Amino acid sequence: MITDVRIIPFFKDLSDRELAAIRPCLRERTFKKGENLFLEGNVCDRVFFVKHGRIKMYRIGSTGREQILETLGPGDTCACNPGERDWQCGTSAEAVTDCTVWFLSRDHYLNLVKTHTELSRALNRLFAERLKCFSSLIEEVSLKDSKKRLVKFLLDILGENKGSKGALTLTFTREELAQRIGMARETAARQLADLKRRRLIDVRARQIVILNQQGLQKLLE
Image (cartoon, rainbow, N blue to C red; front, side, top):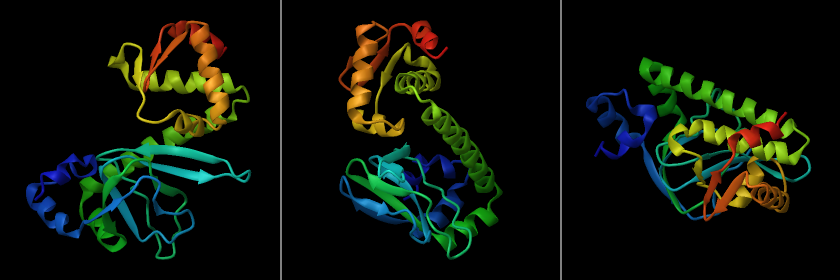
C-alpha cells in the first residue's frame, strides 16, 4: 500500500516504484495524547512522519517554561538531520492528540536522501521554511510587550491563510497558543479578551476572527 504514503509532501516527487521500495521501511506506531515520541538530548536515530493526529515540537527553557517551536499535523515530518551516529535531538516531541506516526530509521533515511536528489531538494526546502519560521519565533519572543507578541502571531497566521477572509481556525488550544509565543496562559487569555473588547478581533470556539486588521497593525508601531 503506497496510497497512504502519498499524504507526505516530502515524498510527493517520487515514483510509484520508489514509494513501493520505501513503504516497507516505515514502522508504524501509535501514541496517546500526552505521550512523548522522544526527548531533547536523545540520540537521533530515526525520523517520523505524521499519519494521523497532531504532535508538538518543544523545548524547556532555563526557567522551566515550555516553548512550542511548531505543531505538526498529517503529512508533516520532523525531518531532523541525524548527522553522525551520536547526534542528539535538539527538541522534544509530544502527542497533542492520539496519533499515528511512521518511523524511518536513521540508516534508511540517510540512504534515501543520498540516492534521491528530489528528497535532498525537499529537505533543503523544509529546512529553509523552518529557519524562516524559527527566525519569526525569535522575533516574536524578543518583543517585551506581550500584546505585541500576540498581535504579531495572529497577523502572521492571517498572512499564511490569505483565503481565510479574517477568520483564523485554530488547530491548537489557548494553552498551546500561549506556549507558542512564550507567555503564561492567563496572560494570553487576558490579551485576547482585551483585543476583543477593543473590537479588533472576535473569539469563538477554536476560531479567532480578525475584525480590524489595520487596527492590529497599528498596535505594532
